[in-house]
Structures are given as structure tokens and as C-alpha cells.
Amino acid sequence: MKIKRAELLTSCSKPSHFPAPDLPEVAFLGRSNVGKSSLLNALVQRKKLARTSSTPGKTRLIHFFHVEAGSDELLLVDLPGYGWAKVSRNEREGWQSLIESYLEDRPVLRAAMLLQDLRRDFSEDETLLLEWLAERGVPSLVALTKTDKLKPMRRKARIAELKKSLDAPMQAIIPTSSQTRDGIDLLWRRIHEMITDAD
Image (cartoon, rainbow, N blue to C red; front, top):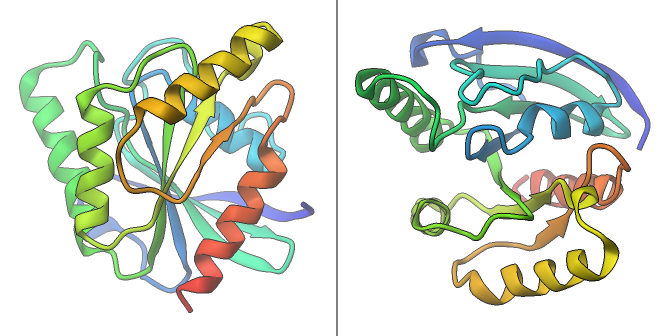
């Protein structure tokens, strides 16, 4: 995939600051420290477009990235991570409200990509999130991250285990690695299909 443009358009702490709904959008969701920023950087072939951190909960705003990839022009949207970030209950509730406002009321949202660390089991959080998206008519797919952290045989077994365990509506499960770029081209094909099918 040839990336012609990749830049941060804006970062928002409230729905009133969201950019005008002009281009199709794909949202990235996942547990804190699952590797969203690293995968975004791998997709757009930039090392530091999305800021990465080893500290869970680093992403506290919704970040909109304007991307031209091949024949597609779209926004990739990085949502705050959920889970075990060390923040106050009020702050977590604020993030949840912000995320739900975006996912429920964004007319140009074409798909949601749920990221899941290959080494972790799916929790109720992931299952309920996929069901919540399906109920609202938002197509979703699952990107398994950090596949390079496991040896080939164990990696293959874990992929099979996670596929079998997830009983929720979605488009596909795609193993990925931001380090080796495994799965990146396939993700772009899926993204292209999801934003063009909705037109």
C-alpha cells in the first residue's frame, strides 16, 4: 500500500471538537497498552505519527489522522484505551462517555477495529464491545497484535484458540505485528472493503 499522506488532523476531548464529518472513518479500539499507536504507525508507514508509550492510558483524547492510502482518503481514529490504566474512576467514566458519543453519533464511521494482544484471552470487555457495535450497525474486525512475541508454533496455536473462543459478530480476525509488518497489507484490504462497501 502506497501512503501518500498521513498527518494528525486534530485531537479532541469532547464531541463538539470533532472534525466535520466529510471523510469515511475507521476507529481503533482496544485495552490500554494493546499496541494501537504502534499498529497505526505501521499502517501509515510512519515511526512517530501516533505517539507510543509503555504507560497504559497514555491516549486520553480521540486522535483523528488524515490518511491517503492508495486510492482511499479517510480518517483513522485512535480512541482512548480501556482496562487497567491507572486513572481515577471519574476520568475513566469521562473516557467512556467520550468514546460512546463518538461511536454512536458519528455518521461517517464505517468500521471499528478492535485490537487484542495475542497473548491475552478475550475478556467480557471485548465480547460486549463487539456486541455493542453490532447492535448499532457498526461493522467490526479484530486485529491480533504483537504476534512476533510468540514462537511460530505457539503463535499458530494461540490464533486458533482465540478464533474458537470469540463468539461475537465481526468481519474477521487478522493476526498482525507492527514490528514485522505481518498482516498490515491484509488490514488495508479489509479497510478498503469496509469503507467502499458503505458507499
